[in-house]
Length: 234
Ligand code: C5P
Image (cartoon, rainbow, N blue to C red; front, top):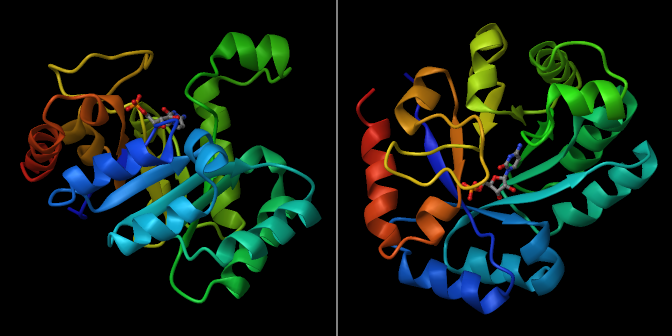
């Protein structure tokens, strides 16, 4: 069984809150996720400060634009030397191929470029009524993941429950990053289809993204240790 790692989502509105959290819990942290909220409020300086703490960074900016704009942005973002970056697969094959080539050519170190399949906030009503996509969501996610692999991305973001339909797609060269992970005793918050860490790993997830159960806990290190210990049971 491959190693599965926990990425802690730093969904804080202010840089100092994110940095204090990391400094206070450094002993247990390896990977952190910087999303739009923190990046747009703190700027790229936060990436330097997190790297100085020795943390690995998933920069979750979900790029989606015309191929040239995304490729040029990839070249700029490569300078920050993060360990993982993403874009929307819905941008299509030309955007994905140009993004992948631009990012890989510009990165000085190993960094993963992954694709967002369908947001877990999208349901079949939104697919049909708003986006005019008639296929079941599981088929859409599967097709997007195949496109990402074909376009040389390193993996996809998807719900762990989606992995049941896709297990042939993942191997040492292509992996799944799964949010919506909860222990049985955790609050679900606004996540609907949650999976616990043990089953997410069993289904093939290589990275689990966990935010509020850890960041809003009274004792984040205890909770993070619990997630890690669940992953060692398999
Ligand atoms: O607090 P919680 O564990 O629900 O946080 C999950 C993190 O994963 C958040 O940063 C959220 O934006 C992100 N995410 C998600 N569902 C997706 C993609 C990203 O929950 N499909």
